[in-house]
Image (cartoon, rainbow, N blue to C red; front, side):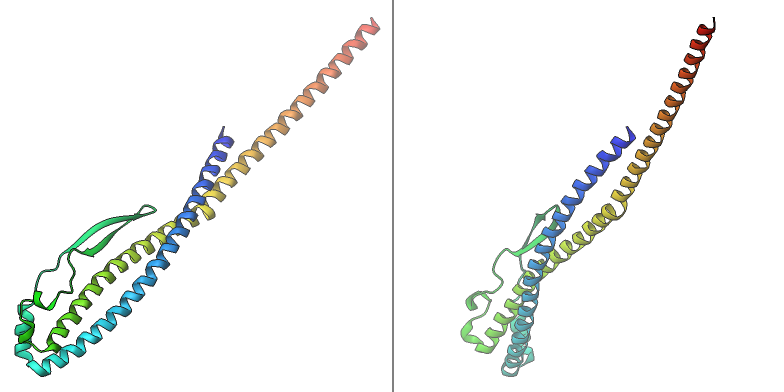
Length: 212
């Protein structure tokens, strides 16, 4: 019974190992796919911030710091984002998206486009693009971290099964099988010994009857 139980446990562990390896492979593919998008988002954000900084310097030189600050306060608003949960092979992570486009038309920014230099309007556009890119990058990097953490966890389980659990069960099964084989040999030896004893007894009885 113990041997059969160990064999069932080995089979279950082996099947679990196959599933875990398949899960790790799928997560690795997803990890590298997300990483490409995350790298692209970082590069895009760097470019957006560089353009926004140059636009800000130009606008500041044309309007002056005080007027530019007043313009910035007038164009402020609260951004809306939605957070939904996605699932990849049991790994949950948040998906962050903007509810409304962050980049607005000039007329929707709270000032008249005719009353400000083009450089100031371009500055607002560049920073709104940077914020939009930042939201995308944040979502992708959070997903990348969750998937990476899950890959580490699955890898630990794969290593535990392949290096400790399954070899330990196999060693137990070998020990039980060897013990059973040894007992079988001992039982066979006892049976042969008993048979020889009965044969000797039978021969003695036969000789006794002949003498009589």
